[in-house]
Image (cartoon, rainbow, N blue to C red):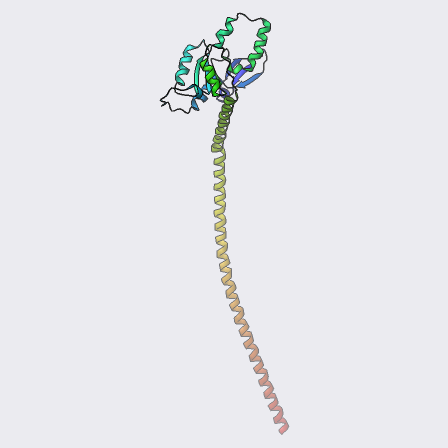
Length: 262
Ligand SMILES: [Zn+2]
């Protein structure tokens, strides 16, 4: 199986970590390379480096184990985490102890391969540096105080995996955030700008309508006054006609009386 670093890939590099058991399987399995793990560990440090007392075993939460073949790297990594009380940097002892048993039989090797495949990510034969989270502070104390025993800490990869998962999630959020900044927000701005222009033109339109309504209202007032005036004139005309008719009536009566008087 091919092991590749997902973060190296994300950064555009091949990120090949190496072959891992079961060998010969062309499938690819993704993980995080030791360099990226160390980077996260360094980034998440809480100590300011101003510690006055030497770090105590119960503070140790991660064991950084450097392969025996790489003592330069051991010194470099040791220096890097010198003031981080969470981290204890060790040279691997397991390698030497395994070698002392001589060549294992084919069956033993197969069994060992199966066993190792479970802790591939914590095996210094595959990685120059491995990071092993310490489950409990007592484990760290026990492991650190008994250096001659074979080093098999009771650890769970959960802590570190959770940390890695969180970091990946943060990276994803950061990328999403950049997407939002670079694409979503500008388009929102454009949309806002469009809406603002539409609102402005609607306001201008409504202002124009308001003026027109005022005009119409004064026109209505003027027409109402006109109607009132014409009503008055009409009623005055009716009065005049009434008067005229009664006058005609009076004159007619007078004329008839005079004719009868003759
Ligand atoms: Zn990587």
